[in-house]
Length: 119
Length: 115
Image (cartoon, rainbow over all chains, first blue to last red; front, side):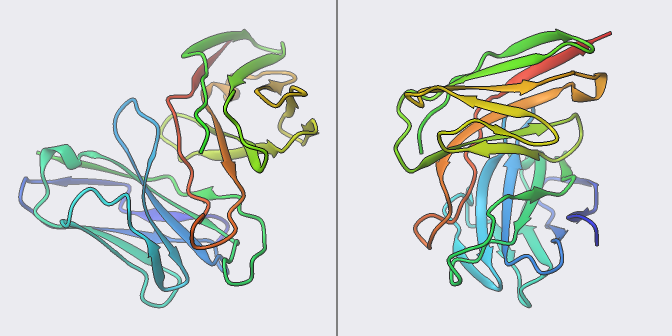
């Protein structure tokens, strides 16, 4: 596709429900990032993939948050037993940069985000 | 990654140049200055980046002071569509597993372009 796409764009969940958020990066992009953006704040890093390998998950706020990218393209961010403080916009970004190739532009291209509201 | 300081908000008249300042007094020699912007209800959008020389592209110009402790993003002819939150980010280029290139956003500057 022309850009990073995310689905759904909006998700309403009841407290305690599990949710799954999908990210389709730009074709051929090796690196994939997830960010969380609370209302009125800048995005905050959650986790990073190079291809299918999750190399950095230091930003995941709790073990209720889980991300995967099994085939090195589409990624899913899963939140188990959602809580009200999980309400935020979840942004996905991809870039062509490859650590293993030690090169390529590291400009990140963002999707439109998924707005999660937990009631 | 170095911390940046930006004004919370700025106004600009449509058609005039918008000059957005950023202070990064603790920047290291290998750290670049990146600018992203986020229009309401959209994901952040890359604008420009630079190390020490001034840079220009089709969207904006980036002026970095000689001591690299501050920079200014210039939108030469602001339009209403430039209304957005502008983020100045300082970090080293991604180069390995110890630096994957994750972006650390601050609060940014809310630029309001007025007719």
